[in-house]
Image: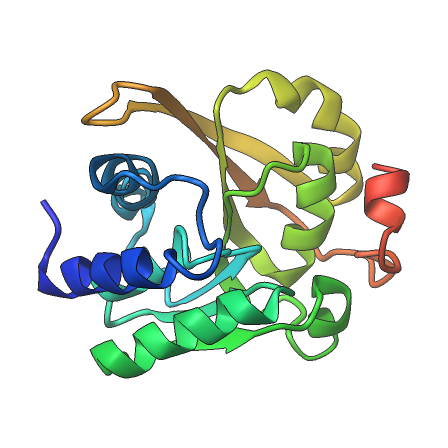
Length: 213
């Protein structure tokens, strides 16, 4: 079930989605299932010790904004290079009077300069391959911090082994869930950072995608 603030967020999303393509999913129940419930799956994986959380490629705020609403005691930084999406999130933040969320349109390669190894948890629900996403996420995490990568399967782990090694990280657990309405399977790959990241990562804009680790 969605609380009152999540219901309001849903309302704002559906209204804005009529004039701007924030999500390709249009049906209310499908949005609730595949965006809101999908984001809420991560809530039980957060601990009391997790105080600072970054969501890279947040889009219309999934999963970061949902989790920020559910965890007012934690600080969230939601990042997306698409300005219209961040503008929408800022409107939601203002409407719901959220005090624990900041946003940025900077690319990860630029944002890292003042935010290296500052976060307890990294989030990303992006479609890019795990070996690419790791290079963007891990440098932001403190040593022993965790990256909760949302995927439809765990198949990408094998190809990401070198990236994990280079970025001094390891897979700690693989969590499997089913969405409550559609019953679609979802996987959260829990990755822990074990050592300080070399400052050459992430590499320059476009390089991680062209030449994955």
